[in-house]
Image (cartoon, rainbow, N blue to C red; front, side):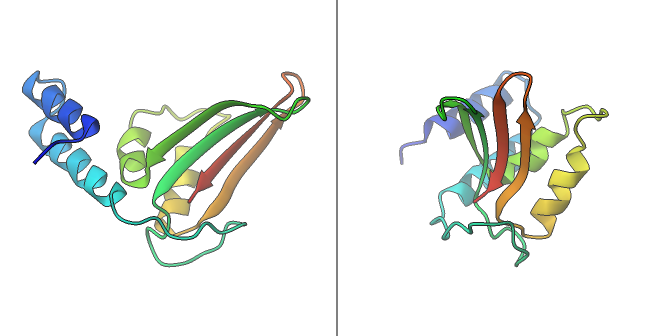
Length: 126
């Protein structure tokens, strides 16, 4: 059986002591969930059953040109793990994203327009 690159990296991090075996198991489990077929994408955030979405997507777009500057796609199962490392501050509340995931929301969850930089940041659960 051939391991995906992501699984191999998780196992290597556990071997090197960068991750505990428990955290490694959670990551591997989350990666296994990401291999399941993706459901249809909703056009707006709608409540539904828990874990309706499969991916957490962040997109940064230049407002003037419409070109995407950054696109990040993360398996939804890894988001909760990653949010543990995000410090709370006045500009971002990680609990809001945790609640959206628990509520089973899909579609665009957050949209922020930065007029000063000319960028639009969108967060989706798809």
